[in-house]
Amino acid sequence: MAAPKTNTDFSDWKTFEVPDGNVSVRVPPKWNATSHGGGINHITAPSGYSVAVLTNGKTVLNCQAKTPLEPSEKLATLPMTVVAVDGISRPLEIWWQDATWHPAEIWLSVVQPSKEDVICSQVPIDYGGKSPVSVGSADNLKNPTREELNQAAAILASLTRLS
Image (cartoon, rainbow, N blue to C red; front, side, top):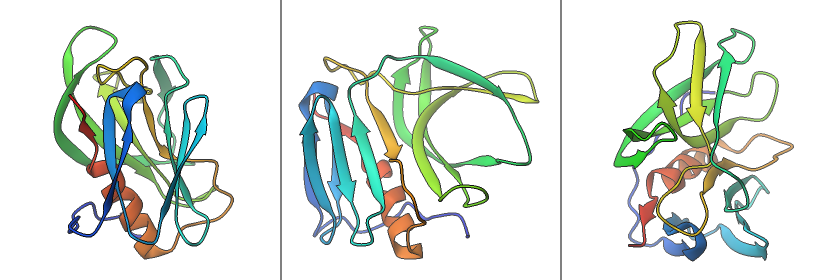
């Protein structure tokens, strides 16, 4: 599957706010946004593919070896910076992984400089709310359609702070 596109016209998209995380995202007309309580929110496409907006985790930095078996790549850098766990302001990025072993995934991350064969990223991310926020593909069992993957990328790209 080709890399998703993040640019879209949001004029007919709804706004979904997650006050505990101090963020909002835009939701395509045919997708449903649902709050399940306990910091769990899902934005679900007609096919069942889902993007999660979670406020039930702790901000951590994870480092792992880069591997050709599960390659992920940066899709876009958003015009927003956040303070990373190391106290340095870093850009917010959209990352994605093609459907090599699992359904296609897409997520927001803050990536820190590291060794060439290692990638260190931070998820959830603190946007100044009561809780840090993790935004990305939920536990999907099948791939989205091409259009849904583009829309999922646009949902992530639409993230803004509430205050």
